[in-house]
Image (cartoon, rainbow, N blue to C red):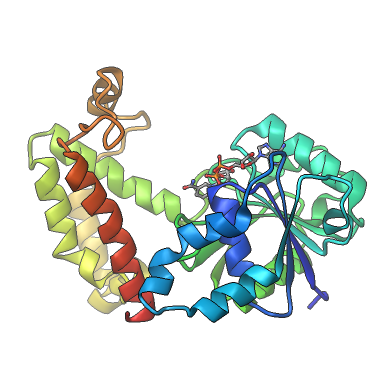
Amino acid sequence: MKNIKYILICGAGMMGKNIAFVMASNPSYEVGVYDLYDTDVAAGIRNNTKELVAAGAITEEELASRLSRISFTTNMDSELISRADLVIEAVFEDMDIKRETFAKLEARCRPDTIFCTNSSVMSPSEISRDLKHRERFVGTHFWNPGHLIPLVEVVKSDASSDETARTVMEVLASAGKEPVLCRKDVPGFIANRMQHALWREAISIVERGIADAETVDKAVRYSFGLRLPQLGPMENADLVGTDLTYNIHEYILKDLEDTHEPSPLLKRLRDEGKIGFKTGEGFQKWTPEQIQQSKDGLNDYLVKALYGK
Ligand SMILES: NC(=O)c1ccc[n+]([C@@H]2O[C@H](COP(=O)([O-])OP(=O)(O)OC[C@H]3O[C@@H](n4cnc5c(N)ncnc54)[C@H](O)[C@@H]3O)[C@@H](O)[C@H]2O)c1
């Protein structure tokens, strides 16, 4: 593997701070963080990871040791940038800002510095379009909360080299992540394609009056949702048999939602300002207490599932 020591995180927002915390888990990495604006990265990381410390999933000493390997700058001409072996960009989700950021990085980094973008939806081929060395560029899609969810999708652009993708996978694994390779630059990469196929059907079930929103979530939670962490859909299809799966698909697929547009119900809710937790109503009504409970519940569940604490 290419020798990687200096990692730069470009953009110190919610994802950038969490990615810095993850990469600093490996003591052989020195992590630099760059942002346009001054921000207290250590305080942000402490705040984002307090549930891990409270649960005993990491010790205060381990947190302090990781923070000692993270440095911050607002200066594009800092050594943190010029010395970087690998950069993970996590600036605003805006194509022009991302392209400008990589142009500035390319002017300051070595030609073999590996460039990664954490964009959730934008194409790495398009983001890297104007770079001189496009072969050293890939997507690295971390999932939120980035310090907890293990998956990172490593997305090859139309020009990424196999070696770049391989090195990035190895670096992510060495920081405790579970990288997967997305061999084609397609919208939604791997996991969001499946997630939104499920959401499209879930919304359609509500829209067709088959069940209400709460019931849809209950049906997932107490059935295949429980076994998904252990048994993915492809292994499950083999478990029940490709013959049975074929027969089920022959019967059911013609009735499943296959629209290529967002649902009219979703559009109506959006247009009426019922945008979910942010306004207290979406598919369901939410009190401030229920919203807090949902957020805390997810983090507690993830810490228990991942660390057994
Ligand atoms: N929020 C999520 O759930 C999530 C999940 C996966 C991926 N992502 C992706 O991660 C990226 C960052 O998202 P976020 O939620 O952390 O955003 P954020 O708004 O919290 O942080 C963005 C940071 O980038 C900085 N910034 C903006 N322009 C910059 C520039 N030109 N140079 C340096 N820094 C700049 C901002 O000051 C800010 O600190 C986006 O591409 C987003 O799509 C987000």
